[in-house]
Length: 120
Length: 143
Image 1: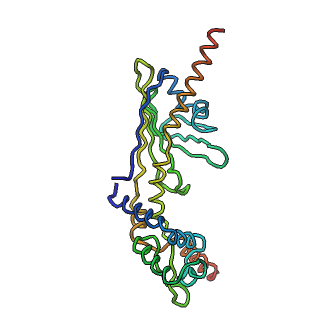
Image 2 (image 1 turned 30 degrees about the vertical axis):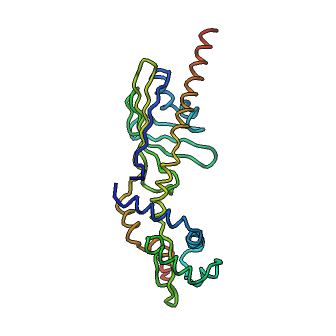
Image 3 (image 1 turned 180 degrees about the vertical axis):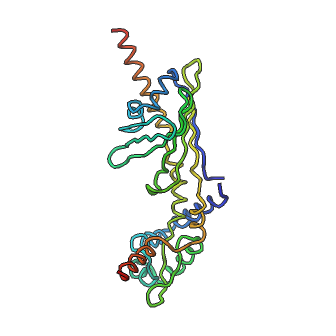
């Protein structure tokens, strides 16, 4: 496994730990590439705070800056790091313990049923 | 290392391997304990489908069939898009023991990252919908 998988996941979770950054990522996911000015209009956050958090998100590879119309810089969500983090969550969410309990109970039921059939 | 790539469980089940094997590899067995509905083409390369309630069906690809001791398949990773090529590999190993069956389940591949995804994750290539929409606009403009 590439050594940086974990660091990617770590950056995603660090980004998501902050409510302002969650709001920024959610706004970019919902609206597509957006300028910092438009983000400031969408969210109850100062333009300065938005710029600071966008810089941090860009450093982490979670958003990229690109030239939009009239050469205004728009920020775009990068989904690949999110998918790396999703893999981490998928491993935590895989509940084999519950499935194996269900398997054991299923086999007990079948055995009881066939034992009952033999008695009859 | 905090990123789990491999999940492993071992349980002893008070039933013979043949009964466990049937529960793992037949539609009736799978739908009784695992999914709600199941179908399976039990041979390496065969496909199995399992549904978990409304709108949630997983496609499993059968990889190993060595009755009654090894059954392996791949399936998609929860939460990733349907067309994502990454899948985890699940292998059940059945070992006869005095009490019945020792069943080991190993699921691997949670930490995999194919090279192209790796590039996307780190280079910050701007691609995706906007560029595809741009191509659509170019195409329509040219028409």
